[in-house]
Length: 86
Image (tube, rainbow, N blue to C red; front, side, top):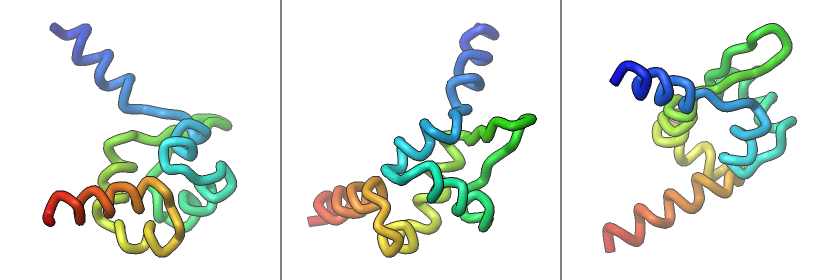
């Protein structure tokens, strides 16, 4: 049981490149968002790590900003939410 908990914790952390791919943006844009405080991230020596749950929370909290910044993932989520309401 404890092993599953540890695996889930490890699965939540993703590298910058994976986070950028997940968001549908370039690595450079992801770095800008991190530097501006837009995306929460943690630097371990020279590697940026992000928690997938924190990325999802940032998208939910700032969905309109992401849509305005032309983030494909936010547009898909926003469209899906609109479709489900209709």
